[in-house]
Image (cartoon, rainbow, N blue to C red):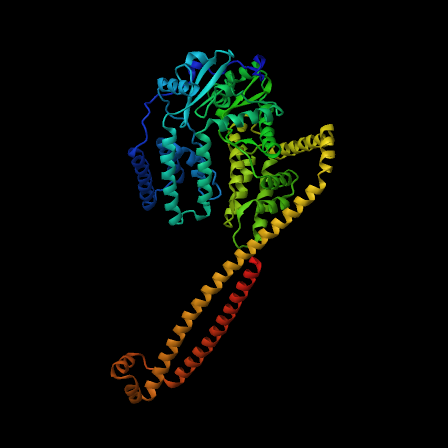
Length: 609
């Protein structure tokens, strides 16, 4: 059996159970048409408030952002997840709105305990008292997707947290996802925040729905993180797989003091908190360093990190130990992107600002047609300014944190219409949520120095790994695979060549479209120029030989020409010469465009062959 939390690590309570607010219970209603009208009504009310405040010049970004957050919390369901996802786009949306949406927590009304019993018994295929010898009817926490009950396993005699999915969650999320899809389609048609990359956002949201509705994902991530974080000296509760299903997740109950309670007591009763720290041998600065180093190690070494380290998910144990819970938001990063991010972090730690600016450009999702040297200059300036602030520990925490650094980089890039990858935004989100705890534990933390120390430790770990006997055996085994590796390198090179060729073909296709469109516009302009030349010539001839024009074109056309302004022969001759010159110039340009179009078609056909 896997090891459970040692009794000697369990701290004394900081907040009594009677001081915790109870979870409010509400009956579960299956989603119906009322759900659609609720969402539409909420959206319309927000739009009316926005227009009214904007037209009367009383619009306040912070107040409106608070109103939006409360509206999303009232609607609940998938809209909370969508709001949390949108809050990542601090590179595009107003900062006030992102900060408020980032506060969205999945706290919600619970559902009746009787329904919870039914779901557990149906999922486990046995009566509740066969599996548990103790079961607390009142839930200890609730969220939009479900609620948590405290129980004790009969066989293992272990207290556990039983997470139960709310009834009709799949139907609710499916209906909400369809509404979100329609809303995104409207935003795309109206070209609202067209740099947002709405399609990628919808993909992220669909993945969130898939993982939220199957607790097997969270259980798998908890088991992996439990193995990884053991090396960080961070505790992750054990998952009891034999009692877990897609709708029920049974994990060890971690009797820790969570940072949410720590922060509340620090604000309301500091002497009480000081006594607890001494009694449990907890040094807040050491805990803060451990959390910061663990997150950096999760990102850069494990490539599997907790993406939602808000105070409710961080537990404090005796002797400066830490426990983490709720792994529903666990992320990893594409290896190539992660290596670039690591180079960026190392450049920051070693004060190589120009190098960090260059890598920041590589981390962008898209770069418009701009002078990158100017962007680089502004990035270097922003990075140097952050470094200067980070050295002054008397400054407020929020202007010295890593979150402040990544936010400054995103704002600088946004000024040049450069948008960030979702991978960067997930990393930024993980660091920003941890800030709420670090500012309480270690407000004068030196992030640059702390990161430099972490990187030194990471390098030592890698050197030990390289020199270990196991690595030596792997090296010998790898040497036998050199021919296979060479073959894969050749395949990779061929693949890259094909990718470059496809990109060239796409570029040629765009160039052909632009060339064809320009040639068509020139053809229309030439027709207009010919008409203008004919009109000028008719005016000139009419001025010199009016009777001849009457006989040539008839009385009706002659009467129309008569109503036009009179044009003397000399100015008419100059206008005609200018029109002829313009016509020949446009004709040469059109021929050149058609010739290049033919050449591009020939090259594309050759590349395709």
